Length: 105
Image 1: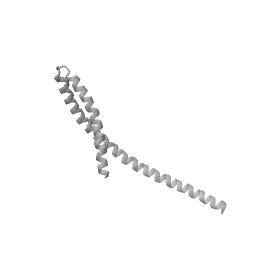
Image 2: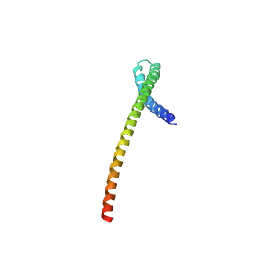
Image 3: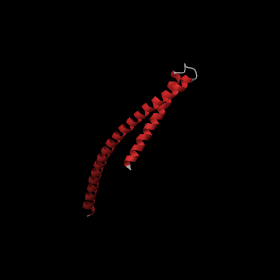
Image 4: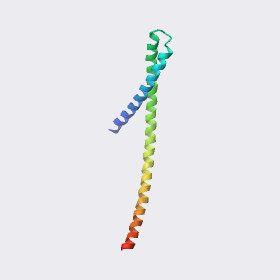
């Protein structure tokens, strides 16, 4: 199940970047070939959009992989910090119990 969710996240991120870059590539391609009447903007838009989508999806996939690695490091560090906080909290609670026993008996 986690592999499916991982693949879904990677695909979604790649798609978002692909669509964004594809739209930009389409606009650039259409402008670049706008000097050719009628056909130029259409062909330029299709080619630019396709190239932009491929580049964007590859970039999105790399972004997802990088963020996944950062997430695992953050999770590890957070676990160690929480362990330290629990240890300190237990020592403080033990000290308060010890003082309470001395006072009350």
